[in-house]
Length: 144
Image 1 (cartoon, helix red, strand yellow):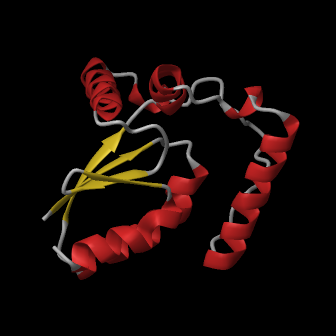
Image 2 (image 1 turned 45 degrees about the vertical axis):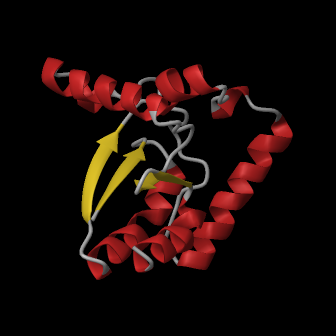
């Protein structure tokens, strides 16, 4: 069994879901195919997503509250308002030509597979968006 795992390095929700996802993958002996991708300039731009700084004040406030809530619930420390957010270039660690091509290819592939946010898990062609869908992913693995 394989899961394609699309995520953005800057996604707090990918971070918050990472330990549970790893645990599920290990429990079901699933191969994880990691696909880091460009969420803001790639996926959002092609699927109608809005970068955080451009969202309404209400949506920004709610998102920060959700991060805080999930952080407390999962007992995972987060910095709700980091000093350098949003990053000027969240892709700076992917500047080699080889890595940049992989990153761009992952992003295009994500859009082709209807990915619109991070994290997204795809198992048996079924898309699970968000760390809060990991229980549904686990049910799918259980029933496979």
